[in-house]
Length: 158
Image 1 (cartoon, rainbow, N blue to C red):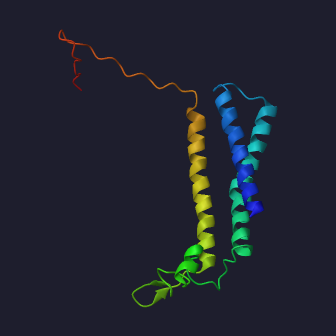
Image 2: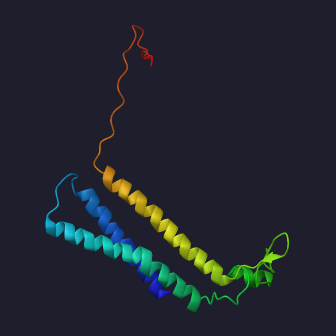
Image 3: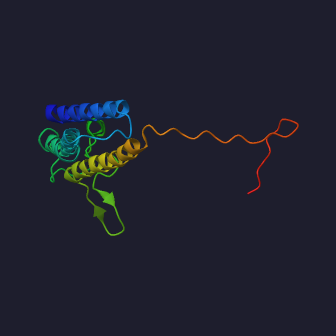
């Protein structure tokens, strides 16, 4: 648990520093060789954290502390397990299908959550690229339309 929380905290701090620097640095200013090298190394450290260390720490936490293994059948529900007294109150024998049951193990759930880390970080990565490229751009003000003699805007024909 400590390693997972620490990796998430370090990742948040690294991303926060990058956002702070991105807001501070004026767009279009050329990079020196040293600045480019340090920026590439810094981004590599962020990518190692978000695509390597954080999902790995989640898998280790789920495996060791939560004991979400392949022999644990059903969706792990935590406190609901104790309240209802069955492994999964919705589908105690697995998810029903036409010819039987689709068994969801706790190991499948931990891999699903790890893949959600990758999907979430991947989408955040794309939005971060977009934000970085569009930072400092001023949105164009809407063009003012001519007014009629009565003060109403004239509509242009297209």
